[in-house]
Image (cartoon, helix red, strand yellow):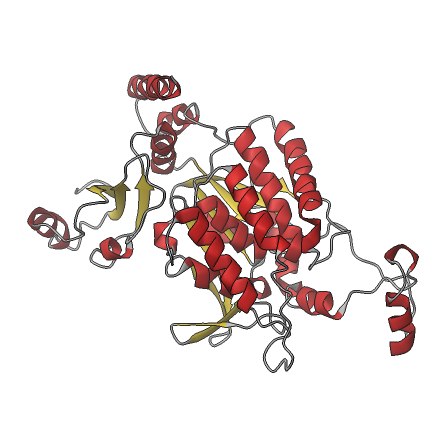
Length: 407
């Protein structure tokens, strides 16, 4: 332990989370100068739907990080190898209202090409979609779940007296809770319990700062990250008022770059690539604008945002200005063409998914060096950290395991 930078602690996830005597002697009482980062690796059976009660392990130990693995699944072991060798693949999903449905199309394209995601994070609607990825469910299950959620008009319960927000948010809260329960089987899954390492960004109104959430209720974290000021009610977490993360960091690539083990980053941006010019000299009067809004969309004269869209966009203007810098931090950058998709057009689910999918296919198929994929990607991961002959033997063993699993 004197010479290591990281110490991986393996434990049976079904065992009691108590600290054993040898752990207390060797780790908790070691000299202060011996301070490698401790990463807990909890081992699960292959058939497990979702980890649970991880917090009981974390609260007792001074850990730098933790992972959930199913040793019988070669792709889980490949993920461990990538993270140890710092070649892990991170996926960052930006906020953008209904345009964020395109993230599902990107996820589908990644899965079809065998590109495994090791760490996932996002802001606002990106936090929702990152939550789907973190559960490690197949794309068909995720797509069916999301389609039901968005078909229910999640932002349709408006406040009669909007003292704090235009939308009550109760419908959205219930839909998020039910969606997570359906995918994981847990009533209140915590961020610590997701198969893939997850984070989301919210804005701490109480402290006027960016707030990165890596623990606690996944349901509450998602609701905080999507709580658009004025549109959705904020969340109270540990005495602080949290709201939409897009105010500070709508495309949190910088956070991903600081995540342990991540070497390559795929970023999906939803900002417009071109300025939205307004072809009018002044804003029309109320009645003129109302008459125009009653016309079919194709024949409208005034190309102005609705009040809801205006409020939602204004909250992220500062953050959007930062996104140009964030793009430079990605290895694979995607920006689906969604200029004609409104922030609240949830009813265009399938169309938006297909737009995201088509764009992701175009980007991924045009790469000369795609992100690490499947078990084959372990070779690249371990080769950087191990002697060539050891890496070759390990890669051969993993490939054999994968072939046996396929049979």
